[in-house]
Length: 290
Image 1 (cartoon, rainbow, N blue to C red):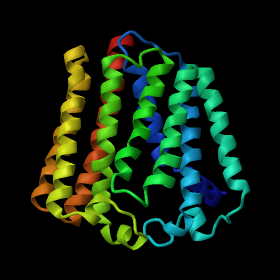
Image 2: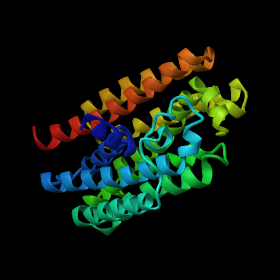
Image 3: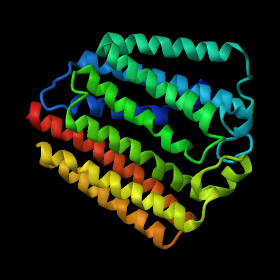
Image 4: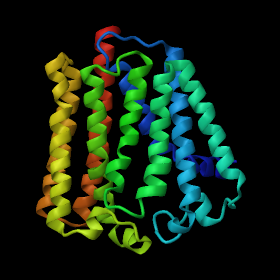
């Protein structure tokens, strides 16, 4: 039973899915004059998790041969042989995606459902099928998946055009490249063995470390823009602490590139995103619960 649960969690990439669902929740509560109901929140989060899971599972299925070449991915369900490939798997993933889109439409309307679809499509098709093996810009475009989650949450409560959700979507777009480039720098041999053209593997150190630092600087600056539109102290504190930490680790990576500093920056990016989403939630609670 535990083995089946672990396989399912791995197949659906639930760790990524939870982060994407949290981004959608941040989008829902980022608007100034919104107060989504508990049921609406739960249904939309399930929809985002389902769509993300469908895209993640398709990624596992499509890349099973590629995953076998990398130490960090060869234990995945299809790559390891725990699950056997079959034409029925993509059908099952498509059914999960359609069900998730229907839930998203019921909870947030057609625009919200469209953003959920675009997020899954960007990761499952644009990134996995079209760009990952072909272009050094793979993860840059792939970063739109997280941005669409924010917009899906905002659209569900009618605030997708407000400055705060738009700023969050831009931050998510800018966050993804330095996050994955840092991991790719630490696991360079893995990506090289698989023939995946990640920026740290195909450019010189000054180029990719500068790209990471500039992306981090831009996303930290934009994450503070909502303070000019009336966001509260809780968001400001969380965004500042997480942003300064991420920026500091990116600077250290720029000054001393290596596996250790790359992994430190990778974890700093996770801390920054967690604090940013926490700040959005605390700011919402201070406005509507306190």
